Length: 297
Image (cartoon, rainbow, N blue to C red; front, side, top):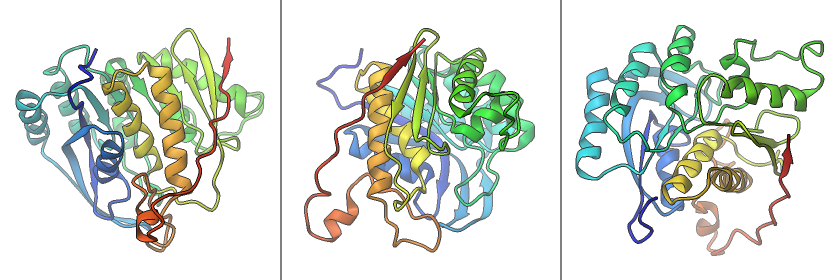
């Protein structure tokens, strides 16, 4: 249990987004909003904006390990968030780096496969390596619906009614199937669903975490923000279900308050209340009460 009188330390192992909407930039914003000290081990440098990814430069595997080792040996790590990995060599380097951390360190794995702009961020050949080496080490894995389908071997756009009797049943089955691959907890996020509900499964409880959809909001970085808030709350000592509930609420608020005027594509989420500060209102308005969660068996 983390010492609540000490500032928690959370490490993001992820790619850099030059547009600062997603990746480590989004992670650091979320960490700051959650009152933790954020650190980074950069896995790749991307040239991207709100419209497209124009270049990706992987960081050498030994440098990735060196970054983790440097912060762990001096500052310490209370939780880890893993985002964009890109290829097999990077995944193997991250798995190696995790072995140098205490086995009890919470790890939140966001299996980033496709950017908001549609660019592929994970080599399809690396999927098996991700499943075999990192899923069993994850405390929580947070795929969206297309990523969940890919992890269990189905097509991302599958809507086969003969296989799944409706989206709710599909998501429940996907959560159970991914859990069988090794992570302690699965949270299938609702951003790509008709119903914007996250599904939490820890092997015992299947809990629905409903929330509002914000079609007029800005979504770039929403998945990164969700998983980073979850990791930050675990570092604070929250129960995983409570951490998942908070992540759902904070990510939803960040989308609703998103910076739609930034860029020509999907604008970045705003977890720091930048728009409110720019407008000198000092407040983003009253916050809606969270919806009741539903526990299923």
